[in-house]
Length: 375
Ligand code: SF4
Image (cartoon, rainbow, N blue to C red; front, top):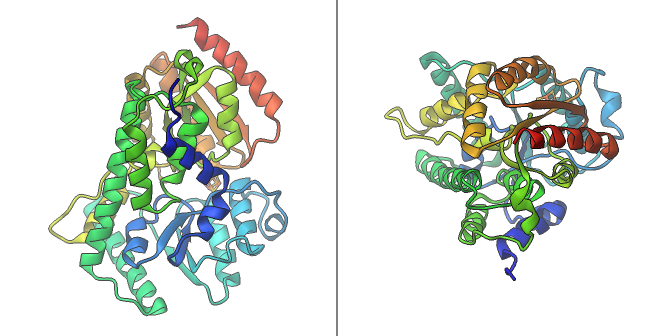
């Protein structure tokens, strides 16, 4: 009988009781919505960077404030901002990411009152000029935070924040590697919980818990998951525990991902450059495996194919958030490239939470049967 991992149970508890965890954070909390906002700058300011995730509540006010082209994830974000769910935040930082979030940023700018608000105009390409441009914009962000909260943020503080974030990234990458190599066997729902918390929890606490978890290779007594069918899950803002539980119910198991807050958020480190920390941070964020909102699809697909091969994946589940135009554009190309590599793909579409479990379950069971036969 294996003693269930204490660290795993702690991660599960935090994920299930996120509002409780957030209440206990003893620093001012700064919110952001996607992983292009550099958490290093928020840490350097002595604040807690919180990636805001869609919650389970039914949308109430957000939908009436925005054009119908906006996706349900962004409407949920707006709802949380307007209905007071996020009133504990000291401020919110947006960056140029997608049209829906751009609209949310504009609405929130009008409604944020005295709360800190900042928008980072973000280049999409990686060139010497774009790195310099982003460095300048990040300096403006630091000046804005410093002036607004009357705090000092110097290069030494930034360097320390970079060290903390890089340490977390290395731990997360090691975790992915252990799962890919089969040295840690974990179900999709737990894998999702742990990874999604990396940009929600305090970085040092998270890294410590993850390192503790990785010391124990057998995390649970559940032997059934060892023979499950290995899959990758691709998408952007798929943050529904229920969805990952459905995948587990079908006998499939996520062993790698291609998600905005997942592997794409950790693959690059901030490497010191002679131009200083702003330049180093800018270079890192512009070199990230790109989300569909940023273009350069080849880089994303090449990386996904590499991960699938390394992890021995039998199929890819792609989840499209309805009205997410950039994902809708990339999916056919992604599917074609994966199929050319002999990797079957299923595309599912839905909102920020699973509304029809039965439908997803049936389609995923059929996919599991298909790729299971091809083993
Ligand atoms: S799901 Fe797509 S459209 Fe919606 S907020 Fe995320 S990136 Fe933007």
